[in-house]
Each structure stands twice: as structure tokens, then as C-alpha cells.
Image 1 (tube, rainbow, N blue to C red):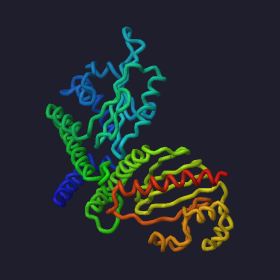
Image 2 (cartoon, rainbow, N blue to C red):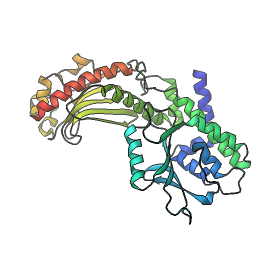
Image 3 (spheres, helix red, strand yellow):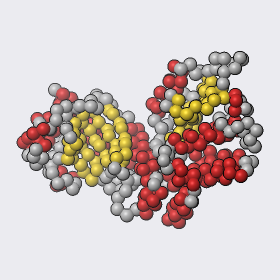
Image 4 (cartoon, helix red, strand yellow):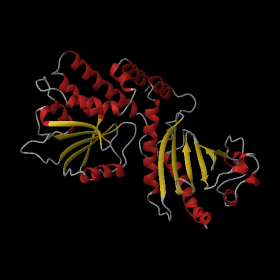
Length: 372
């Protein structure tokens, strides 16, 4: 395991393509693929042959017969035939959505297909590219292909290239295969999976990712996998209020938010940031008086006191949860309060989701009482 990590790290460090990709980790791949698709006619490998790595039934052979668009309608790469006298109102589109930092969300893929339909594209081929296969059945016309296979097929085509182009494409193929092998050592959406993708103490694997400057990539993907697992676990239960799920990356740690209530003013839920499992509450009113003396619980607004009475919060999080909080509450100005209990890299996805479901059921009841 250790030798594998060191070997993959050395391979990536030595790759100029890998180092160039660090500026924009997902956009880089889309731009590289688009460059291949736009290969001028007469090259030893045509642009359409590279497109067939992604869309095997792509019918056009000359680069003058199609147009490659980047970031059109917020989609990574889109290929469509150029209008001709025989094909003036083309409704074809070949779309690639590239997910490296995260795993896709079903709603996002449905939204993209709906957006294409509204723009008049009826004959579409839609491809999701990623390191891991998605954990759900793909909606509509979407298909999927993983990066390691893309790398292998590009390398095969590049064997017919020569000189700089050949070396460049081989380097790229080696890079995405090595990157995929590293990322596959990370979390998978399974019950026994441990919550261990954030840095905590000495971890040689994460330290190597830090040296490669792809630690953020690993943590973002880990948070995406973790959130996907939580959403699926929570979806089995009925709640009277709408649940909101968000995840992000802040100060080197993943942040997962799951809450009930209004996203902008009045909400109650759980925030998991790094190894803190946070019981949080956001009020519609700022905690002005309490902020002058954060140890004075009597100065808290009535709603926050009510949550202490009902057991959502506690007067002593150190004793109850073993947290390292110096004051009874932590906060973000002007009106976001939280207390946390510690998590460890040994906690499983299943353990955390069980705790989350129990707490969200309480939050679902309490938010109605707070509104009253």
C-alpha cells in the first residue's frame, strides 16, 4: 500500500501535464478533450476518432462537420453538427459532463437534459465521465464512462500519433490513470466505509496528496461520496419539513450541511465539518446582546434558550459530548449558533448516518415548535 502511494506520487510529480492541470482540475480535462476533438483534418488520428472514445456511434468524420463548444449551458463539453443545406435545423447534441472532484447528483443530470430540451435539442447523447461509477441509476439518456478506461483508449489512439502530440497524449493518459488509482483509495458509499478522508493527525497518504496539491480534490470527492450516502439513508424516512443538503470545502476541511427550515434566516440541523458533528441553529435575528459576553446564557434569545430546554443544545458540551469547546457555544456572526461533539476517523458512515437520522427527526419536530 505504502509503496503504491509513493510510486503513484512520483509518477504524477514527474508529469508536466499533471502539473499544468493543477490550475483548474476539472476544466483542464474538458479543455484537453476539446483540443483532441478539434484535431485538424489530415492528422494521423482524426478528431472524430477521439470523439468516438466518448461517443462510439459519432457519425461525422471531418472536423469541419461539427463544432465543439465549452461551458455552453454550463455543460463541460458539447459537440453539435454544423448546419448545412441538408441539415439546417439540427437537433443533435453530444454532451460530456465531467465529474472528478465529486460524484454527480441525479437532479443535476435531469436539469441538464431538461435544459437541452428547452433549447430544441431532441436527439442527444449524454455522457457522464468520472473516476467512480455513480451510485444511482442514471436518468433519461445519460450514460457513464470512467477515467481509467478513457485513458487506456486515448493511449491506444496516440500510438498512431508521432512526436510531441504522441508524447503529450501518452503523458495525459498515464496521468489520469495514476490519479484515478489514488482517488480510488478514497471513500466509497458503503455502510462500513470509515469517515477518514479529512486530515487528522499523522496520515502518510493524505500528506502525500498535500505534496501533490490535490488534497482538496480528495477531500471534496470524499465529502461528495459521504453526502450521497447520507442522502440515501435519510430518504428512507418521512419528514414533515423539507430537508436541505449541501456540502462544500472550507479551510482544508469538508463541510456537510443537513437542515430543516429556511436556508437564509431560520433553520435547525446538523453541520459536519472536519471531525466536528455540529448541532446548529440559525435565527432570523442577530444575537447582539449575547455576543458581548458569550458565556452569559441568560442573554441568549428565547429561541436558543428553548433549544437548551428541549435538549438540542446543552449548557456543558464538554461534559455531555467530550468536545473541546472553550465556551458553551461557537458562532458565526450574526445569528448562527452551534455546539459540537467530536467524530473520529474510526467512525463509519453507518454510525454517523444513524446518529444524523435520529437528530434530524428531533429537528423536524423542534422547528415547528419554534415557528409556533
